[in-house]
Length: 342
Image 1 (cartoon, rainbow, N blue to C red):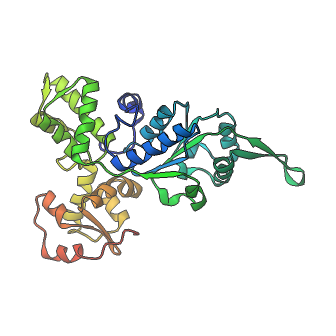
Image 2: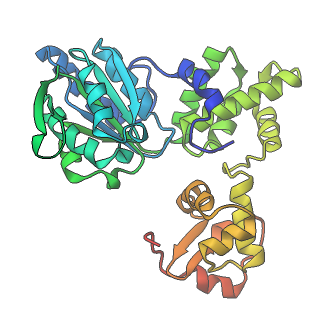
Image 3: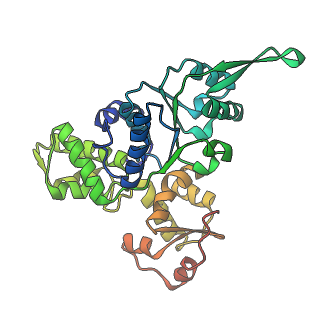
């Protein structure tokens, strides 16, 4: 329910709720103003906008901003992704078919293959690529001129991008998690498009459980809509929203079943830790990667779980959230220095 990744069945609904221009885009004030200036200057010069890199956790609006860049520049949009480009030839085929001023969006650009990355360097800087024909000593490079285009790259792990690739982007924007007030604005806009009636308290209840992520907020809004429809409720208030989300096992802080299972295992089975990741994953019946990539980032950000040189620990806030009293020997473990590189 609260996974930040988009689900296949919700792509169409998510696309319908996306804002179409920067004025309708809620939140990310700093990035929005900077990007607006970049696009306005490009239109005044009558040239394609500089290449844009968007980084940040999933669900915050990177794909939406790429679509807005194309809309603001009145240019067509081509969408692809890093995992889909595993050979230089794949990238050459895409680049050679671009039209003048077109916007190319590459999602998860850090997962592109190294040969394709090296071809992209020249394409971004000089708007040309060299096509290698033949093999061995008889191979020849045929230069192919490309039309001026704008590359919009999106990544959830900017640190994995090579320095030469990052340096070729004219503008880099990092998206931050949304505040509850900003999520309420997102929900109000979505509710209007879905023809839903909610009280202010109802919006606040959903926003507070959305983990600071618009994608999750819109997903929870649709689930609350379904609950209200089945129960014959026309106007959704805080009590209705709370009852609906409780049924879907999303608690007041946005924790779902997996998050609470991790905390309960830490507290009840390991006395607050420290405990290794693989042992913790076995205790909750999940893969280590699932615990590390799905549950841990939010729990760490909320100050509920800590990562130390000796393993994972439950911080005082976790005991409080579960309604338990923290024993004295757990306090010492919780005060170990946090090491985010574990």
